[in-house]
Length: 210
Image (cartoon, rainbow, N blue to C red; front, side):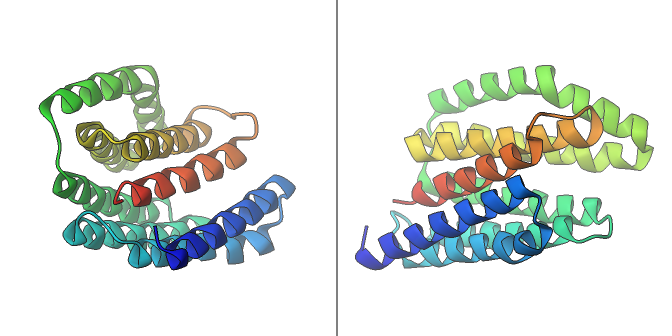
């Protein structure tokens, strides 16, 4: 890792921690500034590092940019849940492409399938059911998102590196807590848990490029 990459990563961590503090304090004004800035710093980090695959880096940066779009849509006062969900769905498609460009193994894919199967039965099924019960129009988008993020997690297990697997699992946990809070019930310190796991998950996917 070059000195520039390390410095940008350090800036990302500093901004992310500041955003977590803003979420914990309920300071929406700071959140509006810090949440997008955190992803911008991570995009800069991804562009600065020396990846094992330039093509994978390109696909992953596309995913980060789409995630930034999703962040902005979901934090606006108006309810833009479906457009935000769509942006993140597209981001995960880009992440799947990036992970496959890094190379996957059959054994890892099988482990990933087992993990998401358990997650889908224990958590995902409940979220989809409650989303459909609250608004029938949400059943399709939420189901599609669950399928695509599960594919991302399976792909990360296929890659098999620590950062890929940890990043994907943290992202999975973040969205599980977000979905559970929105459709099923409150989770203690849910918003903070979502943001911490989300940022660490994104960082893990970026570091998987090394």
